[in-house]
Amino acid sequence: MSEALYYYATPGGRYAQKGCPASPEVDETLVRVLRTLDETARAGVFAPVADSCDFCDFQAVCGRTREARAGRKKGDPRLAAFLKLREIP
Ligand code: SF4
Image (tube, rainbow, N blue to C red; front, top):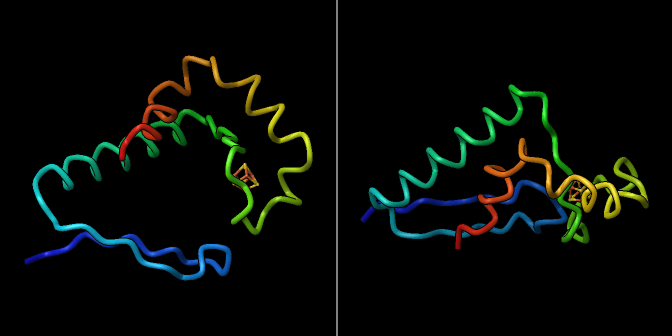
C-alpha cells in the first residue's frame, strides 16, 4: 500500500511526520491545495492566519499585531479559497 506523508521540517514541528493511505481522493486534495497556494501567491496575496503561531519560528517577523491584521483580512474575497483549505480534515 502507498502512503501520503507530510513532513514538518522545523524544530517547532518537531520534525514529525503525518501519514495517510494514498488514494485518488488524497491526490485530488493535494492538487487542490497546491493549486490554491500557487494561485494565491501568483496573485501577490500572502495571508497571515495567526491563530496557531506557537509552533512557528517566525513570530518575531510577523510581530505582535499579527492576529489583528489577520482578523482584518479574513473577509477579503481574494483569500476565500485559501481560507477554505483550512476546512480540509
Ligand atoms: S507567526 Fe506569522 S508566519 Fe508564523 S504561523 Fe503565525 S502568522 Fe504564520
